[in-house]
Image (tube, rainbow, N blue to C red; front, side, top):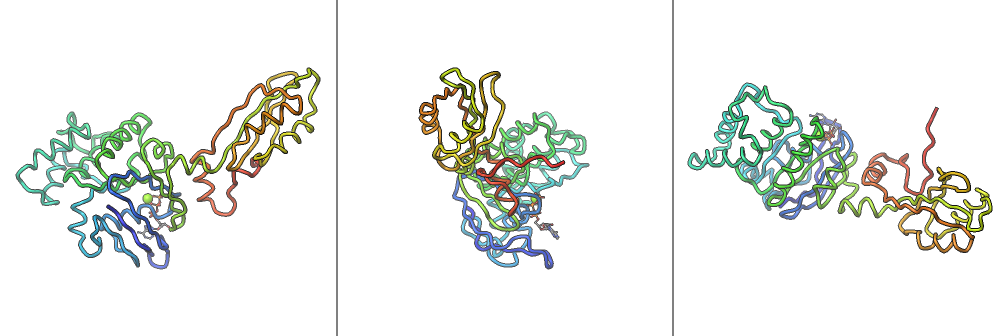
Length: 328
Ligand SMILES: Nc1ncnc2c1ncn2[C@@H]1O[C@H](COP(=O)(O)OP(=O)(O)OP(=O)(O)O)[C@@H](O)[C@H]1O
Ligand SMILES: [Mg+2]
């Protein structure tokens, strides 16, 4: 449905995209992540035909966007970053206006509008001025204009930005529904959104693609932590340094930090691991050292941590690094 090949774009002498390539097959819902200024909106504008690349090419449905913008725009719906709307128009009036601009066949226009309005939950505000609507409803209007011509591809640039948690949940649900039948590229800064909505994540940083994978693989492939609480099996008191060195020698464990225990006679630690789950080896080491494991709790690295590591440059912490100390 979408193919991007070596896409580069500079604004004057500022490079915004430095050779981005990816493909999105029909039906996929893709999360497009990246820090501010990474090049997400630039990529979407090029795909939508509103901006020409400096080099490289973007194809929608096999057609080069630069060669035939009219044809490619017919196949896609675009919700731009700031969702520009005509504030003084009524919702219905605006959707009629968009139909006119898009030259949708007069016949069946009202049916299309009705369909978009119903899908986006706008029935109760049809006669209201857009300027009077809450942000959540404005986003719905933006989505309605994007799906009016029933395109196969939706480009949604931060559709939930600036919304309250209830509105976010509503818009997210709407996108999920749309994703059942359409190809969607969704840019967002809300990482849980991607985990709940998208089957694939692209991460862009400084104009370059730095990750392309399923959200759970991006998160879990990075390892995580195991929190443990230990006591002595013999009822004797524990020597923290000794226990720590036992834990450090468990295969798979990359670092050990003291943490909260559970009261007298117990010690708590946080173990970090890379790709290998250390829990089996941990049980065996505990038995050998006469330690009782009162608690073992594993946590995967979150998508957020992976995102930060991939986009924060050299200084970003890895899962295997000790936790940063707060600075004074
Ligand atoms: N019209 C413009 N003129 C000059 N520079 C621009 C213009 N639009 C974007 N840029 C620059 O291009 C780079 C990429 O911007 P872009 O808007 O694509 O990022 P983004 O990933 O969408 O960021 P955000 O998360 O803040 O929306 C940034 O450095 C930005 O300052
Ligand atoms: Mg943007």
